[in-house]
Length: 268
Image (cartoon, rainbow, N blue to C red; front, top):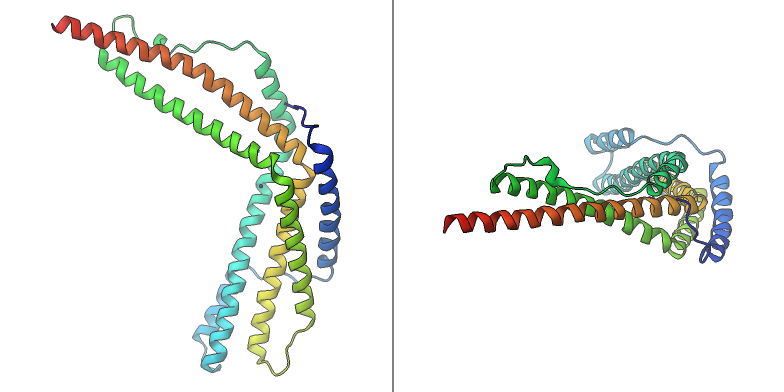
């Protein structure tokens, strides 16, 4: 929601924005936490909807509207569950980041050991063994490049997060305030109680969704410098390994080409 290198060029303005929005988030979260009822679980919402669908006491129009509102509540609850999963992963990453950064710094300080996949082959070998090893090494190299791309993309996202995350935080805060206002107006005049109950479930699950979003944004904002440093470290470590493995892969490709040429010469 990834070595302590300097990012002072953009941090001052960025963290000014973060401070302002962190204050907004804290205020909105504190207000919404007051007297908040227990959340309905996903299974409870699905069970309530199933009971409405199976019931015979509501007219068709009322039943349709209630089911639609429960659809909204279920969708919001599913999204909330996903965000809490991401939030738990992010907190775990934040907790382990300092040690991971130090470990990478130590690795980066050590001399780079050359990688020679040819050592895996016996002295007397044939083209089939070389080609098999070459395919394995190319697959491993592609995997390393994917890791490098992941860390590069993540770092790019982190370096450009300020505006987007600030906007998302503001949007979630506005939506949360509107939801709280809508909850205070319940029940609407002359609305069937079944619809009002379902409407309340839909509003409450949206409320919890916005609160979960704000919690995620708060963690990202408060730990942005640490996460950026970690992402830089992982990116540089992956780039170093890519360079090391590429040199070995090129040596193996060269050996494969020489072996093919030798085999072709013998066949003449």
